[in-house]
Image 1 (cartoon, rainbow, N blue to C red):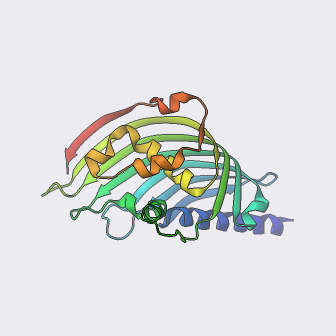
Image 2 (image 1 turned 60 degrees about the vertical axis):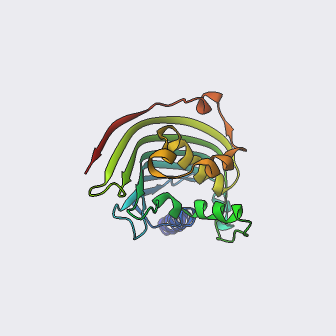
Length: 228
């Protein structure tokens, strides 16, 4: 019996890590993954999404905790069905290089939406994913702008995001929702040169529990702006 549970843990962890890397198109690191023994649930602590090589900052996002209540059979069919998801994003780090590259443009969803907008067929092999209920939490957002020579300009925001959504039907909606809701109150388009419009337009089918989520249900305050 212990061998069965060990095999189950390994399989679930592998599916999880492969899915996150497929969704982001980037490398990840994980501090700890706990797979429930008697029910299909998983808790992940210390999930980090890594920036690609051209960026000096190693981290794009830090997820303090992720909880999933899922249909285990769906994971083997590459059609992942999550009944409940709690996503606590403690940090989103936006970076603009000296030559104008933005790290958020490295996300697979952003690249896919760009191709679709240009009339190209999207064939990036992203997994099918459905989420019945999502509880999204958010914290700190930083912008690092290396175009401000001789030192990068750093802006930091403390954000309080606490929103609930239902009926997320594909991976584009999920990633678009997390990125756009984390950044919408910090005016990234004017500060760092990243256009949120394609992401916001991609979540029109998602149902929010309470219209306050779209009326500024959280506060996002400028904490500091400085050159480093």
